[in-house]
Image 1: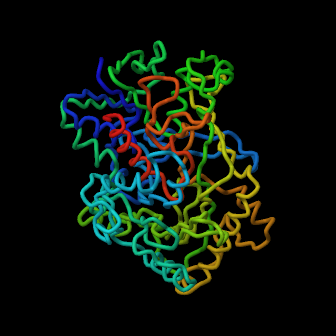
Image 2 (image 1 turned 180 degrees about the vertical axis):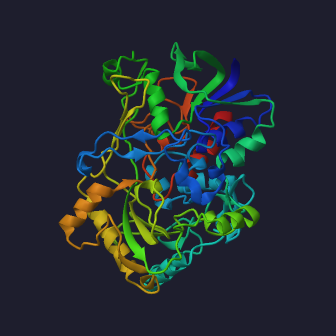
Image 3 (image 1 turned 90 degrees about the vertical axis):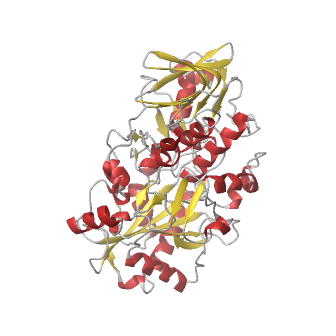
Amino acid sequence: MEVDYVVVGAGSAGAALAARLSEDTAAQVVLLEAGGPDARQEIRVPAAFPKLFKTPYDWDFTTAPQAALDGRELYWPRGRILGGSSSMNAMMWVRGHREDYDGWGVPGWSYDDVLPYFRRLEGRVGGNAGAVYGTGGPQTVSEQRDPNETTRAFLAACAARGIRRLPELNGPSNEGCALTPVTQRRGRRWSTADAYLRPARRRPNLRVVTGAHVSRVVIEDGRATGVEYGGRIVRARREVVLAAGAVGSPHLLMLSGVGDPDGLRAAGVEPVAALPGVGRNLRDHLAIMVLRHATRPVTLTGADTLPNIARYLLARRGPLTSNVGEAVVFAKSDPALPAPDLELIFAPVPFVAHGLTPPTEHGLTVGVVLLRPESAGTIALAPADPAGAPVIDPGYLTAGADLPRLLHGIALAEELLATEPLARHAGAPLAPYDGTADPDRLAAYVRANCETLYHPVGTCRMGTGDDAVVDPELRVRGVAGLRVADASVLPEIIRGHTNAPAIMVGERAADLIRG
C-alpha cells in the first residue's frame, strides 16, 4: 500500500490530524491504530471509565520500580483503542495556563499562537461559551449534567476560604475553583473517535486500520518512507507522522534507530539518526488522595443501580453521567509563583488505586496533584526485548522540591474538608489515609500511595536546542519526511490536563504539514 500520509496512532492527536489531512480530497491518508474499535458500552457511560482499565482497550503499562516511592512499580493505563486515551479518560477539559505556553519559548507555540487552535477544535455547549471557547468545532465540551451535592458543597467551601470561583475554567489563568467542563455530548463521552473519525471515515481518501501495531518506521537514505506492521509495509509518498503518545512515539523512534546511539546499540538496535533527547525529559502529574468517609449516603458509591441505569439510558441523566473528578481548584504553594503549581480534584466517591475495585462505602476524595514537577524521567528500550513494552521510569519525587509541595496541597485539602458546608459531609479519614498531621508519617503515606494522574509528556521534546527531538514544525531532526504530533512534543508539562493540548497539537500539525 502506498499513500500520501501515514499517521500512527488514532488517539487524541492522531484522530484530529488524520481527519484534518483527509479534508484535502487529493491526499490519500492511512491511520494505523494498534487497538480495536471503540465498541464497548462502558466507553460511552462517563462514570464507567475505570472498568476499561486493564482490559484489551488498555496498554496496561507498568513503570520501573520507583526508588522514592518505596520501590513501587506503578500502573500506567493508556488507551489502546480508536480515540486513544480520550476514549477512557475522566473527560476533564482543562487547557492549562497562559504561562505554560508562553514559558515554552518555542516560536509559533505561545499562548496567543495556540489559542485559535483550541477555539477551532472546541464545540462548547452551555456556559460562557463564545467568550472563552470555540463553539463550532468537532470536540464537544459541555457542562456536567448532574453534579453531586457534595461537589457543590466543595465549591461553597472554596468560596468560604476565599478561593475565587472562575466564571470559566479555560481562560488565560486557571487560578481559582470551578466545576470541571467535560468532553461529553448530552451525557455521553465524546472522544476524538466521535468528534473526528466518525465524520471523516465517510471520505474515500481516509483509511483507518485497527489492530495495526506498528513495529518500526522505515528509514531509507535519511528519509522516512513508510512504516511496518504485521510484516507489511505501508509507504508514504509525503510524510510519516507518529501520534502514538508520550510512551509509544519515542518507543517507535528508538525501535527505528532514532535516539541515543549508545542506548540503541545496548538494546541491539543499529542507530540511524543520533538524537539523544528521544525518550528523555519525561514529566508526569503525580497525585495523592485525601480520603474521608461521607456522613450521608449521597455519593457515587453504588450508583449503578437499576433505576440509575434506566435514568441514564432513557434521559442521559443521573450519577452515571459523572466524570468522577467533578470540581477542581488550581492554587499556588507560594504566592510568589507566576502561576498555580497545585491542583485539587474533588470526587464524590472514594477513588483508590485507579478505581479498579468499586467502593463499598460512601466517601469523598480530594486528589492533590503536583502540576509542575521538577522530577524528570525516561522512556527506554527494554534490553532483553526491545520490541516489547518499554522501560518507563518517571523518576517520581527524585527532585527535593516536589514532596513538600504535595504536603502543602494536602494541608489545603484538609482546610477545605473542615470548612462548611463541605465539613457536614466529611467524616473520619478513610483508609489508607489516616489523617495524620505528622510530617514524617504524611510523607510516608505519599510515598506509599501516590499514583499517576495519566499525563505523561515531553519524551519527543519540541524546541530549537540540541536536546530537542522535533523542531517547532514538529519535524524529527535528522530524518526527512518524519514528524511527531502528540503530547510527547510538549517541552514542559502544562498546568492542566493533557487531552486538550494533545488535540490542539494534532490540529496544528495538520496546518504545518499542509503548509
